[in-house]
Amino acid sequence: MRYKEHECRWYEYVAIISNSRPPCEASPLDQVDARLTLCVLERLTPELRAVLSEAALGSTATEIAAELHKNPHTTLKRIHRGRTLFCKALRR
Image 1: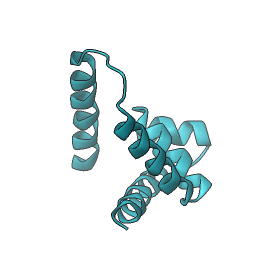
Image 2: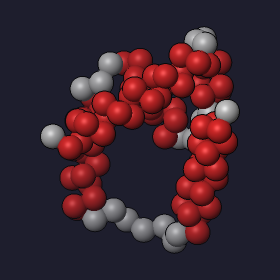
Image 3: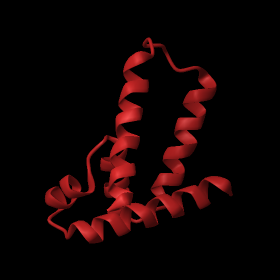
C-alpha cells in the first residue's frame, strides 16, 4: 500500500513542477534525446509500452487496468517491469 501512496505523490510533484515552468521550445539536443528515447521504447513489448505511456501521462494503475481490461495487480507488475527494462535499455 505504501508504494501506491508514494507513486501518487510523485505524480502530484510532477504536476506542480510542470505547471510552474514557463513554456519553452525544445532545443535540438532535447529533440535528439527524445528520438533516442522513443527508439528505446520501441524495443519493449506492446503491453509494456501501453502501460508505460499511460503511466507517463499521469494515469494511475487502477485507471490503466480499467482501460486495458486487466487486473490492477498485473498492471502494477507491468509498470514495474517496464520501467526496469526501459532504464536498462537506456543505460546501454
